[in-house]
Length: 435
Image (cartoon, rainbow, N blue to C red; front, top):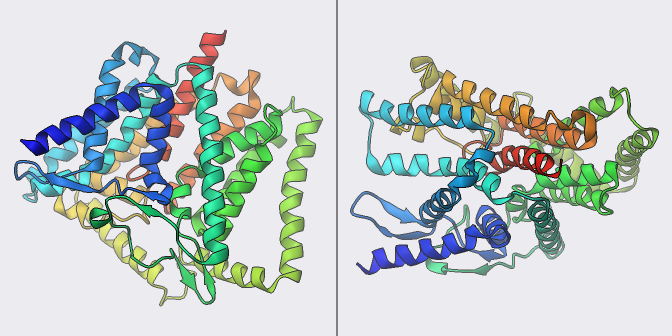
């Protein structure tokens, strides 16, 4: 009885926080980033066992609160322009849940543990019904700037002093992957740990950074882009650096081939690209530390593909898992293996699209295409009137999709994709309201 009361109190508290857009945005970012790792509360914090069905975690409570808030604001659901995608996802979800019964691998605890991350999709309708005017969107943007700034300061501190400074909450039940104080150590180069959390916010740095840099709507666009670059360089994050290179390629093509582009935009574009080339060239010839980091970066990038040393554990584990996923997909090509023991044993943070295909099969690809199609429909009106905004949104989403196909598991564990989808919808609604 006491446990049920505790559940109710937590849910009510979260509902009150999520209902207002200001506390809702901050609370969402806190949950996504696990308090940014400096005030640390693991979302997988164990709370207790619920009737023998499985352990209740903090995220279970959070998603229940999000659903309640969406229902309380159901009169605003007409603003949601992802209706077809949501319907497809809902029915695909039901089919995937039923698959385990058919292949005799169903277990309630397995089911709960595997479907839990799917709650990230709730961020899409939540942000659409929460950010409904320019004031709320500006608060979202300022929150990104503030939190990213705090993150980079702590990240630099960790990197310079080689120490970790989180304030741990619920110490006995809070567990992060690996109790070593650093995320990665190769040779004499030791990276910070907090980068894995700031990674959730990096795409928004590029979105607002490039929009402000090219449109002059704010004076800290280049600052946000700088935070992105500094974060991924400190962390030696191969996929984020590769993703950024892909982002620069897309945004360059879109700006160069726009017939009515302004000359000053081209000047800014070449200044941005030229800066990276000049600084990189100088560092290569003057900094032995940078050369060492660059060599390690190339090694880590190659570990994504078969150019890696065949003894590279990252590549070997990814190759093995991928082969097993292909085998499962070949047996269940249409709807995948569902949320079963088969899929649960293969899900990994290093494989995005393969995870989706393993669980949802070919139908999962249809779902993603539907989401992207409706996202494009939401930002299409900005092509003529707000071209830079369109370019920034489109380039970031293409970058995330590219990264998702090759490595990061955006649509399974990561809320970033859902919030980016929501932003396309939010900006469209604000544009209609202003007109």
